[in-house]
Image (cartoon, rainbow, N blue to C red; front, side, top):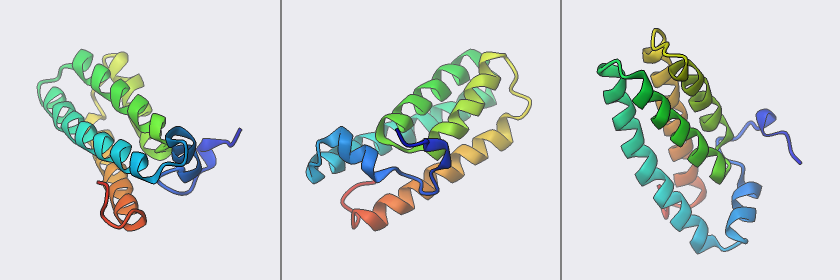
Length: 122
């Protein structure tokens, strides 16, 4: 198994192909659903941080981590995991910078997918 921590791309294309069974249209559907859900999740995570709600922030970061890793977006999943761990411990002291890191990875992933799938997804 490939060590996803070493991945230099925002998305592990081989993993996504495995998940989709190599079906390009299904990949587009998965990515479209991911971006819709993750975008909403990021907005909710921002609100949870504004409200200093570490329980909700933990739940949302955990969900973003799982959905990111399910499609092979390892770098996005990793920054969500860092946030998840801190929020689970009730520590939102670094939430602002961590949230910005999540947003940056999300935008990087979105640019990558748009370029790779010619705007069919994202």
